[in-house]
View 1 (cartoon, helix red, strand yellow):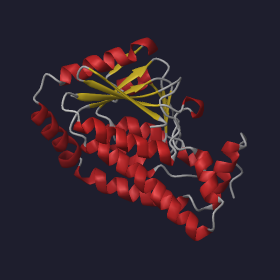
View 2 (cartoon, rainbow, N blue to C red; view 1 turned 135 degrees about the vertical axis):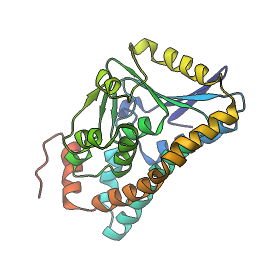
View 3 (cartoon, rainbow, N blue to C red; view 1 turned 90 degrees about the vertical axis):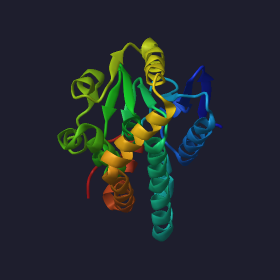
Length: 261
């Protein structure tokens, strides 16, 4: 795989996004490779849990907006097909993680933004460094992070979701820990170590019981979440075709403030 590195240490698999020069921004190839990585790890019986992390200084900066710019240049009908497919595949990745039968720990250093925040919220636990920043600022790009909204609401509740998605408030690791969204706040050099110990703690339980408990949490109690993810993806794709989205993405790539129509 070109943008994902997978390593197995004892009972722990580490899936590392490896686009450091792009701050691990999600393009179609990275999304597909993450799906393949989780599928491969699923088959490994010795693996009892997964650490999801990012190479370089950041976890994941969200969608790769250069990909959005390329899609926006297509004829309208073709662009809408691409928008729908792009968001559909991202939602499938989230669903794979939510249905994954083994615990997933997101080890976050640096930025986890937008769809990258969604990856963290689709994980079962978050270990964050003292330099971690979590944000969902799609509206400032003229976009809608529909799937991310569903996941933040599921994990943290509607009030926190509104602060992040509407007001554009960033949360650091300590703030996330105070509202119950972060298992532990550690120094950058201890993230993987603490995440590994958390996976090992979970591994004391029966694999069958762990898998069944994840189904109860994410598919039973979170029954409406999967429907909300699909609806959110459709809403995100629709908004991508608006003038505001075009201006927001262009302004980001040109490193200027947007001028909304």
